[in-house]
Length: 152
Image (cartoon, rainbow, N blue to C red; front, side):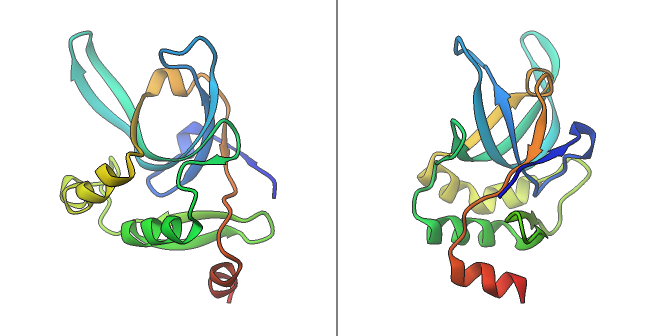
């Protein structure tokens, strides 16, 4: 399993990516997310900014946020259809139906809001700060049986 270097300009809804993000912490940590909105405009107190919105899957390298792999597969399948990007390196993406130019639509978020709140893994990142680091397509661990079904 190897990461693949990716470009921020290529990131789109459904990609599973990793990047270093500092936020309010003293040091940056490696974060893996499923991208829902790659560059969502946000009007705040400090003016207009952009946010990267996603579901946190892993933190600090390879510590899964959702430890139960079957729950992870269920979450990914609720959002869309899981696709193989690179079978050998176990890199996948989620084909999210009905995404607009900005990614995940409000109707889809409303439909899955309860599930996101239960898991507690919905995150927003300041786009300008996130894009200061290198982005990778990140491999994720899925159950062997499910990987075989996807590869067939």
